[in-house]
Length: 196
Length: 196
Image (spheres, rainbow over the protein chains, first blue to last red):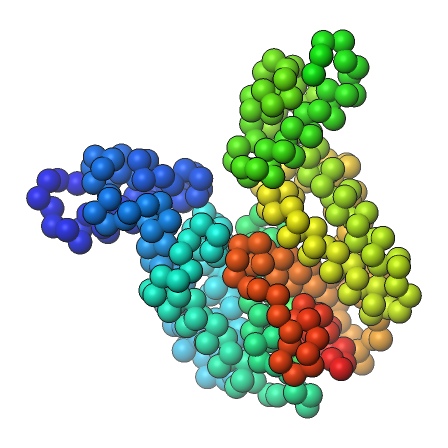
């Protein structure tokens, strides 16, 4: 990072350096000082962009949610049937988590991020909105169910499964009865959809 | 910790010191050196009980799973109907996670624990076995579903929900249609049970 490099470039360089630290060492290694060192700037330089670690991590999480949502939406849009669109979105979501465990472990840590940040909040709400829309497009059960409850249940299911995979609790496997990937059968069971 | 204190007492003191560090600072603060310091022994003393950090963390996770399972089983056993037993077990599980977030965040980290440890493995398998038994006691859906898929789905749902609560993504709320706590309606929806 050279002196005179323009303003926005330093911000991006600090986010890139944070992503590298997340990928190699995990969230506890990300400090303003370590990020400045990796970006090759003085430890005081980041202050112009990020007043504190929470602000930096929030910008990093925002970048991660952009990538995750971009991948999940592209996968969804390549399918046309209602269930297939949800399945493709969820598969891409889980793939992102498994490919970037250090990033994924940090992205939902609202205790260390700023959940009021408009960019981050917009992306998270966009994700929930996507899920709600995809669920509403499915064949509806005869009973009425609070859509927020379904979105929270589905988000919990997918977040829990992705986290358990990252943390080496589950391995990918096929469902014993249908022969389908377990993560697809889980989705169908949780949504009350036909499983074969 | 005094010299001459008997052997088993040092092991327990090291686990206690680790739990305090988990509760106050999180898993990244737990090192052999920090735990020895907190327990008031030399940094070489733990080696007789724990050859490395993984072994220490595994013993700590084992203690946590004992407490969690004890609480969840006691709650379950105070109920007699099949659904009520599962609901009470899950409620107690989530209460444990929320009361001990530092411990809960570490307990499923099989990437830093030793999943082959007989004591830890026995408890984790016991937990899955309990869930499978409670699910088998519920009114069965007409379609056949691989029981392992149901156990993994339910474990993911509850782990994901507890983690999202710890990480400040969700707040406890009532389901808009039934007025019941959302975590109960989520369970019923995921299991295909009547919600009112």
